[in-house]
Image (spheres, rainbow, N blue to C red):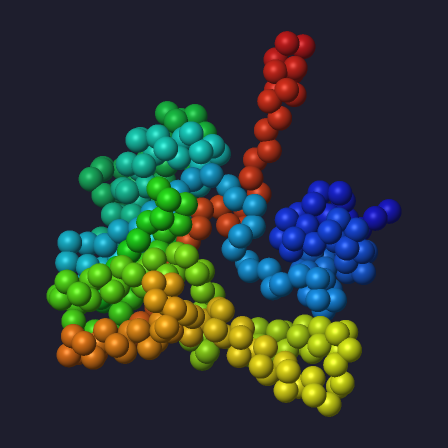
Length: 303
C-alpha cells in the first residue's frame, strides 16, 4: 500500500510548484513524509524552500491594533468556517473584543484569554465565544495572539488576510516621520514575509539543514566537492537576505536594505531606531481549508 495519497501529491505540488510525477517520486523516496519530500525536491534543484506560511488557508481574520499612544500592540488570529462569516459585523466585533482583552489584561496564552472577562462584558471570553458560535452558526476558534509593549506599530493587509506588528527601540516615537517609517516597515513585513529579524535570530539547526540541502543541490548540479562549500556559503548569504527582515531589500526603495534605510531615517531625524521584534499572522496558514462540493451538497438534500 502506498504511504501517501493523491491528495498528498496535490498538496506537495501546490507547496513546491513541481510537476506531478516529480512530486510522486519525491513522496515515494520519502515514504510519504511531506517535509522530507520537499527536501528531496530541493536537493534535486526542482523546488525552492517552502516557507511554513503559504499553506492551504482557512477562513477568519488576522487583526492588529495598538492602544491610543502606540505603547502596547496586539496581533490576533481568529478562525471561522467561511469567508462570509469573517466579513460579518458581529464576528468582527468579537475579534476586536478579544484583541482589547489581550491588550488590557495580558493573558499568557489562548487558554488564559478564554478565562479572562471579556472587555466591556460581564462574561468570560470562553462564554462569549460559545454565544457567538450559537448565534452566528459556525465553529469559531481563537487560534493565536501576540502582545508587545514599547514603541509599536500595526498594519492590517487586505481586510484581515494579514496582520502585522513591529516593535522598535527608539527615541523618535512621537515624530510623524518616524510613524511613517514604522508603517513602511510593517508593510515590508506583510509584503516580503521575513522569517527572522536578523542573522542572529536564525536557529543553528535551520542553517545546518539549509547547508545540507544546498550541498546536495550543488553536488547534484555537477560542481566539484572541493568548491561546494564556498558555493553553499554564498547561497546561505542569499538565504539571510531573503529571510531576515533587516537584510531584505527595502520594498519602497531597492537601493537600501531595511537596516540601511533604518539607519538613514534615524540619522535624518537626529535620533536612534532599532527594530526589536515583529509578528506576522496570515489567516489560516498551516490549516486545511474546508472543501465544500456544492453539487454533492445539493444531491444529498434531495435524497
